[in-house]
Image (cartoon, rainbow, N blue to C red; front, side):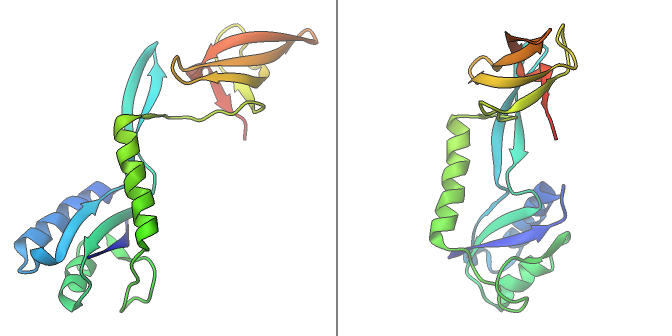
Length: 176
């Protein structure tokens, strides 16, 4: 069995996963299929001083399918509602992803189960806008990021003097 990627309507990935799994189980070719996955990762964000976990798709609009490619399995997948088609190869003969690519995606899935990622990633030297608190509408440079506490150390210019402040992730936003 090889891994293939299908493009689904954005926002319907879980529904495609459920309907595809149901179609596979009802077919005579269930042994030709392995896993059907929507690549997601668990993210942590701070809201009202509490850590909240949520799920984020890291390949929105795509579903991974482990299968043996033949005419029957191709039709089961292709005829599933809200699937636009396979990614790679030709429409008649899709190409699987390499085992290295599949392992990278599967490792990322396993990694996020044990170590959730923050919803927003910040880097030292990045310029942010303060959106809440006494420094609202000030711009600041990130000096240090503490993902454990979901806090940032920023340098903000107050009366042309650099001032160090510590803020929660929710009190800043990235500049475009």
